[in-house]
Length: 200
Image (cartoon, rainbow, N blue to C red; front, side, top):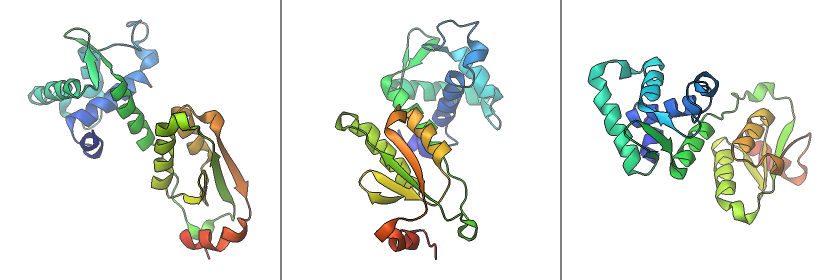
C-alpha cells in the first residue's frame, strides 16, 4: 500500500481521502440517512464525496471506470470488504492504512532558528511491549518530524509541538502514555542537541 500513499494523484489515494472524509468530517451529515453509517459506506455516497473534492475528475464519466478498478484493487488487497454490490466497509488492514493517512496530516510549523524562544520541548512516552507496533509507528513519525532522540523513549525538539503530538497520541490511542514537557536546559547533551538543530 506504500505506492498508494506516495501517489497522491492516484484513484486509490483519492478514494481513501474520500473515505476519511465520510468517516470523520462527514459523519454528522450522513448519520440521519444511514444509521449503520459507521460500519458501511455506499458506492453512491463515495461517488458524491469524490465529485465534491477539489480538482478531482470523478465527475467526468470517462474517469469513473478508473475508480471502479481502484475499488476492486482495494478489495483484492483486503483493504475494503463488500457486503453486497453497493455497500462496503474498511477491513482491519484498511483501517491501518487510513490511520497512516491521518498521521501523514500531522505536521509541525516551520522553524526559524533566529526566532527560537530558547525552550526545548521534551517528549516522553511509555508504551508497553504488547503495543510494539503502535510504538514503532509513533517513533517513526517522531523521526519523520525531525525530533532528536535523547534517550530510548525521550525525544526533543525546539519547535512547539504539544498540540500536534497529543493529536497523534489520540489517533494511536496512547494519549495517557505520552507527555510533552518544556525545559530551558538539557544538561550534558545540550551542545549535541543544539548542533543537531543548528542552534548556536
